[in-house]
Image 1 (cartoon, rainbow, N blue to C red):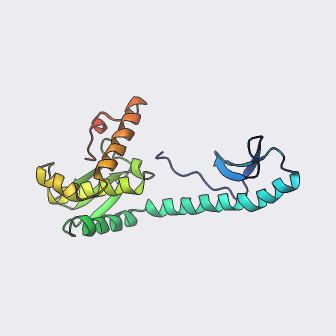
Image 2 (cartoon, rainbow, N blue to C red; image 1 turned 135 degrees about the horizontal axis):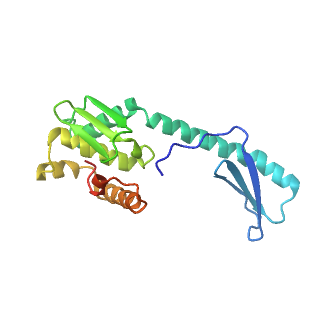
Image 3 (cartoon, rainbow, N blue to C red; image 1 turned 60 degrees about the horizontal axis):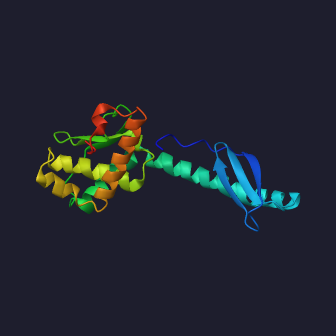
Amino acid sequence: MFNDPMPVPSQPEVVVRRSARRRRTVSAHWSEDAVVLSVPQSATRREIEHWTRELVPRVVERRRREAARGAERRSDDNLLQRAQELSRRHLDGRARPSDVRWSARQTTRWGSATPATGVIRVSAQLQEAPEWVLDFVLVHELAHLLEADHSPRFRELEARYPLAGKAQAFLDGVAWAHRTAGRAPEAQRGASPS
């Protein structure tokens, strides 16, 4: 889930899967490094060639766009801009981070904040997480710039993010999955981003 996106080959292998259940519809999707073209059992070679020309370039382009968006999202500059926007939206602009960066060394917590310097670090494990989960971690760390501990005041600031409960449940689920797979550090077993 949090791995780097797969490279986008310009001419991927195309695997044709015929289905007796399929009557008229044709679809294409990625499976590993190949594009799977699902067609009706009765599809002719000419129809398969047509759908290969029509659908495969769309699937390849979609993956290319997703990879480009992912690379943009993973930049530290965009992470800082996102944090500033979230501060304006949910914390009245009072949390002013001086620096927000991805951290590959951040393996025991989802994020960390240093109120004295305004520096926020976010675990690189979250680079492929849904945007609303990343936003929650950023709001959590921004709230730490205003309240250092997990006091009731801090919890009130954190709760200003409307998807806080849903995002916390997502993070708890990821931590549980990592833990049961033997990959979660001991400290990550807690519920909070930091």
